[in-house]
Length: 88
Image (cartoon, rainbow, N blue to C red; front, side, top):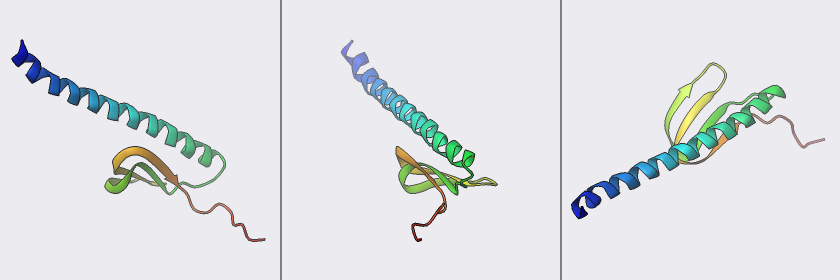
């Protein structure tokens, strides 16, 4: 029984950790898609849709914007050009 536990506990922990990262990433993607949807509804162009922070791991170029997957999946960003200036 101890051998079985020694073999299965690391696997269970790894699966739980992986599931946690996937869940967090899906929440971040949904959140950032909300930002992108509102920006597009207001006529603001989004240039880059990023999931994560840090160096990019993979970038896909779509016709209207780029999608970037970054190294640390703890946030995201929808980058858009400056919609207005603060100058009078």
